[in-house]
Length: 86
Image 1 (cartoon, rainbow, N blue to C red):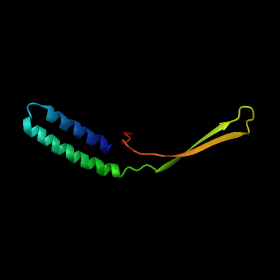
Image 2: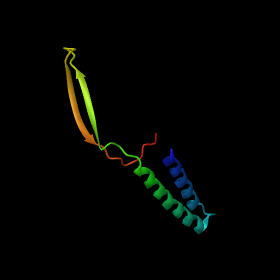
Image 3: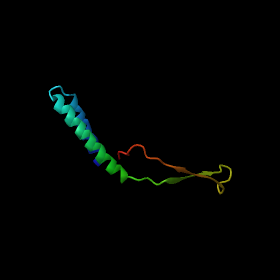
């Protein structure tokens, strides 16, 4: 939820910088806000950690013999490049 709030602040600052009535002060203020949002976002993202590896297991039942299963299993690394918004 906090990352969504930071993105809302960033979007508002972008709107201010594009408003001709804000002038140069609006552009400067938007840049300062954008930098602060970047700092806060990095701080929050450091606390969001996924496991370094996950195991994926697929179990297939044999249609001819219901008692027999074929297990396929692998591991994969996960890299988080964008926050999950849910």
